[in-house]
Length: 511
Image (tube, rainbow, N blue to C red; front, side, top):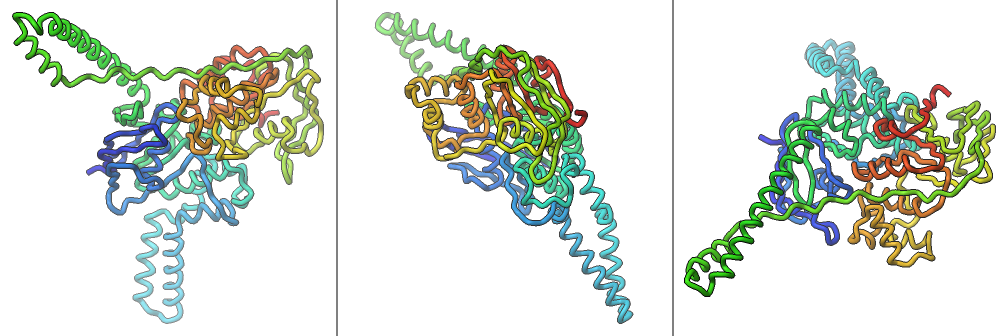
C-alpha cells in the first residue's frame, strides 16, 4: 500500500496551468526528488502535499495517521528558547516518560509499592530501547552535520538569521524522523561540507522523503526516483538523477519520432482525401476522413525552454588594485571574523568558502556598506563600481510586480523595454504583472538579476547567487561570469558552479 496516492490532480496559478489530471504515488521508504524549471510548480506541489494549499481538483490521500515533516525554502521559526532547548522538543514524549518513571521510583521509595516499581521498570526498558540516553549525542551529531555547533547551542532562536533558522528546522525534522519528510530546497543555506553530510544522512534515512532541489549532485546521491514536472505533467522515473536524464532523453526522442511519423501519415491521408473526395474513389476518401477524425492525435513536442541571457554591463576600471583589506574585524554585537590582509586586483575572480555562520555574508555586507565594520579598514579603488547580489530574497514592496520593480529603478526605460529585459532573464510574460512575492524562489531571483544586469559595474559581489536557480539559469550565470571582464568576489557552496572559472578559492577559516 502506498503512503501517498494522488489522482486527477489539477491546479492553476493565475492563468498558468501547473498540473491537469495528474497522478503520483509514494511508497514506504521511497526517496523521491522533484525537478523542473523555475515556476513549474515544484514548491506548490510540496505545499499541496503538506496541506498548506488546497488544489483546484483531484485527490491527495495520505495513509491514515501518517506523520509528516515539512521544510519550505523560506523556513520560519520563532521563539525565545535556545537552539538546544528547541531541538530537545523532538523528544518531548520521551522526556515526559522519564518524568513519569522518576515519579514512580520516588513513589516506590516512599511507599514500597512494587506495582510502581514494575511500571517504572517498563518505562526504563522503553527509554533504553528508544535510545533516550543518547539523545544529547544524537542532537550534537545533527548540529555538527548542519553547521549549528559553530553558532552555539545556547544561542537564542530570536538571534538567528533566516538561513540559520532554516537549518534549525531541518535539524528538528531529522531528529523527529517522521514517516515522510517534505523538503523544499534544503541545501540553500548549507555549505559544501554540510550538503555532503546531509546527502549521506538522507541516503541512510529509513523513512520516505520528497525533496525539491536544484542541486543535481545532491539529488544524484539521495534519490531513488525522480518526479519531473514538465509542461503541466507529473512523470515519475525510477533510479537516480542521472538515470532520469537518460530516460527522459530517450522518451523525448521516441515521442518526437512518433509525432513526426503521425504527421507524415496525416499529410498523406489529407492529400488522398483532397484528390479523391469528388472522384471515383470518393467512398474510400470519405472512409479515410472518418478514420482521420477518430485518430488519437499525438501532442506536439513541448517547446524547449530557452536559457536566460545573463550578461553584465561592464565599466572600465584603470586601477590595478581594486580592493585592499587590512586588519578588518566584522560582526554585529561581537566579532565574527578578522581579516589580516586581503588584496583583490583587477580581473581577479575570487571565491570565498567556509562553514555556515563563520561570517561570509557578513563580510560581503560590510564591504557593501550594509553594516558597519568593527575595526580595521578596507579601501576600494576610486574607479570601482559595485554590483551586489544578496542571497536573501527580500522586497521592499512584495506586492509590486516585476514590471513595477524594474521600472522604479530605471524610470527612463519604456514598458516595452522593461518587458524585454525581464524576458531576457527568464521571466515569462504571464508573470510580469504578478506580485513578486507570489512568484517561485527561482523567478524572484531572476527579477533580482534583471535589476543587477541593468546596472553598469566593474566589481561584482555575489552572495550564493545559485540558490533557487534551475539548471539553465545556473548555466547562463556561469557563462556570464566567465565572459565578465571585471572583478568578481563570490560566496558559494557549489563547487561545480565555480570550478571552471574561479581564479582563486579562499577558505575563510584559513585566512
